[in-house]
Image (cartoon, rainbow, N blue to C red):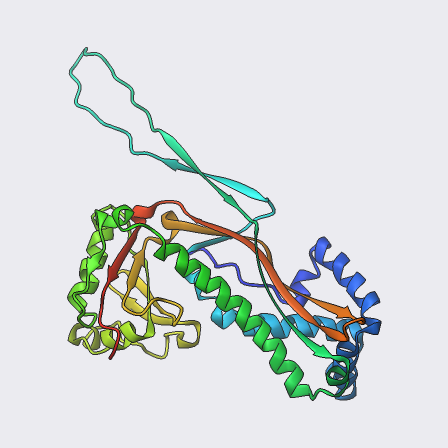
Length: 320
């Protein structure tokens, strides 16, 4: 399985010329930022940092480490890095075979293609700002807690956008040409199999499923789930939203999913998330307003490539 791109730590990013150049500029211009100075001074005093450059690198790493557990969106869609503002993806239509006869006329109807253009023009951003007085007096745990919130919020926004992308697929374009009706009942094993079967009917491998935490709770009560190898074990990465495996699909939970809906996809053909600039941090200051802080941003693009590689169950019970 191809490795999912995750945000790089500061040391890894320093090997990339664009980041190294921007970072050196940051080091030179943060002298007037009281929050950065206070953060560096406290860290140097405690022996955590050696200088201002080390403090800036640590700020980036704190944000990234807090973001990683919440980047569930990258687990449920094909994710790739790019340096392009736009990438074009080719979709091959199925060729039409025919039965010929010896010495008969040969008819060639080769593959036909359509294209999907994905622009990396979406900037996900969050920032935290402080007054000069707060920046000068903030405690170490408060400053780190604010940095962790930046990473968490950017990652959760990315996940919410990917889930919304799948939920926006029209019912008529889904695998099987319709949604699977839940009948206002709890999610059962048989309904999960029905959703899985819709994808299999389109000749796609159902490899990823994502659902609301309430539907996961319902599934945990299914006898087939309890008595199978799919029950969460020490190998399940619960902190990353991964529950385990059911049928041929890895299960992911997120409160960002709509309660009452279940999606199962064949991840690679279904859609794409392009990351042109992964999570980066940058100090900012506005002396006229007396505001100082940190901004975390990323630049991405995403889109659906094959809608019929997505199956959806809906109208499940929304309470346990």
